[in-house]
Length: 483
Image (cartoon, rainbow, N blue to C red; front, side):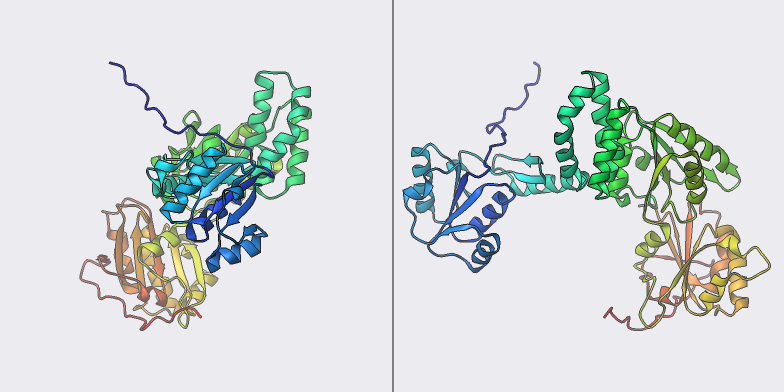
């Protein structure tokens, strides 16, 4: 037999309450919770309670809400659009429910689902856009969990963008024929230049971009987003990055970006690997630049996924320059860089009051020249140094830093595949660092952190860096707390 779709016992609707009374009977926490919920609308809130808790009384004063300070009477409900029985007293709540129904008013009895004509939802508010999540009173906590997930998926600017759309609807209908042209305009309006301007808080610019879009017949130029994919874990991707992935026509991704992150993009988006690993480049940087320009000129919305943060050793500067020269719109979305993820894996303070107040991001290849880089001098003076892509030159990094005056006993932490479930952690000292080059069992990206603050890390469960049993780095003592 075919499966039947489960039936709702409560049908969701949006009720007009603008300027209409909504009566809440009660003076405690339940009444305050309902008042806060209804205050997200333009209803006229009236609270009926002889005795009012201090928190509710303060809220009433702060929000200039009507308070009828007297015993409940049926007449208090007359003319109401909705009624909430929130006294916490079963007998009084039942009386309120009975009176409301006799007057033909929908009523909700808090925590008494059997008495409710309607259920209050968990609400995602992007006025005039609203998303209501209900469980028919069966699981309020579940409704809140679902609401939270929806809330972080939606841009905070969605409401202002929707208001702008409402103001332009008549103009769009007069200028654009029904069908594909009009649908294309609204798609580009909600995902293109107007949406990006609104998200940045530039409402006037969003209006101008929408007018430009209308006058061009909804033919838009492309847009490139240089997006930080983070160190690898999908849940470290930013909310903005995820939204852009869901809107992208094409996704260009580096070799170090895991497939689960790429898979978070729109299902029908074109996916192009442009990965570069040491000694193995699928595309040159010039080819990547040209591809971005070509896709942008074709009107595509493109996400250029870069491991970690796009502005940290991601060659984003060259790509931005190419896009600027071609006159193509672009934006940069930060990501969690590998140094931060590695530090988190070790519970390692990158700065530590009284020990170090600065840090350096670098690659081991910076030490290839004959001149000692300035960052090496910073390391000697106490800065924490995060070395990207340094496994193959670990011995040279250690040798040059020790020659520059950094103690061989300086603490070192190494993480392979930072942030991922299969990560490996190693501890040791600067004198142990050359052994990293001989670790043929390491195939993933490696991050090395060097400095006195590293001694404050949690080394439990980490492996010794050298073949022999490395001594635990000397503790920096009791770590001071931030003032």
